[in-house]
Image (tube, rainbow, N blue to C red; front, side, top):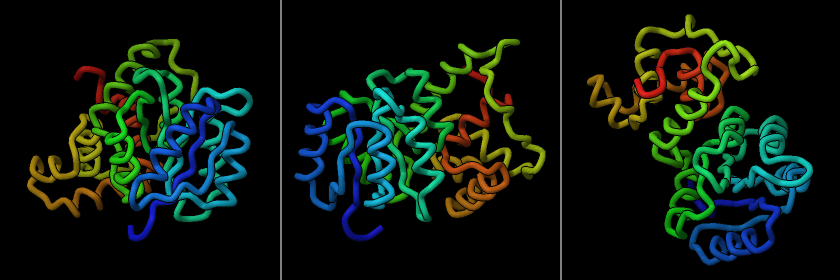
Amino acid sequence: MTGCIKVLVVDDQFLIRAGLVGLLRAAPGVEVVGEAGDGAEAVALAARTRPDVILMDIRMPGMSGITATTKILAQAPEPAPRVLVLTTFDLDEYVYGALRAGASGFLLKDSGPERLLAAVAAVGGGDALFAPSVTRRLVEAFARQTAGPGGSGGEPPPDLGALTLREVEVLKLVARGLTNTEIAERLYISEATVKTHLNRTMSKLDLDSRAQAVVVAYETGLVTPGG
């Protein structure tokens, strides 16, 4: 991606939002195109400003960050913005819901300036914004909470029967926290081939992000918590 990364900041707490905006405006290669104090305002601003990246708080009065994420991604023309969820807790069950809604990942609110800027740059460039192990830890924790007859009560996970053996293999390694480079080395294939397999997998399963692919791997039992 070339040029400035356009960012929309969404947080109901003024001081946190102002801090994020100030930090981003001082960073080279970043343009803050708007700031919103709630989910409804975020949906309207996202449609108007067409940001590349949205820093999205989850817990807000009125429309939550999860609902806002769903609406924004459903309405956005291609290329859709990449949503980076802001949360206070790294094992917040709401984050899991945001990942299922299509968010690209999450960032702790107490992360330092360097981490925040690196995350925005990574997402703006189309890369995974966090270490895959972070998503793995989150999904494992959620899976432990919802395992058993009670389940999570959500939609049934997609069928993996449409995937080739190699695509299943790549999906499993993605869910175990390996990067594309590590998967390529493990399977003795090129990194471009790994991306091709993952893209085909996401297309077949109607997924929008790597994070959603990890979630599906756990929900279908392809990978088990701690396994």
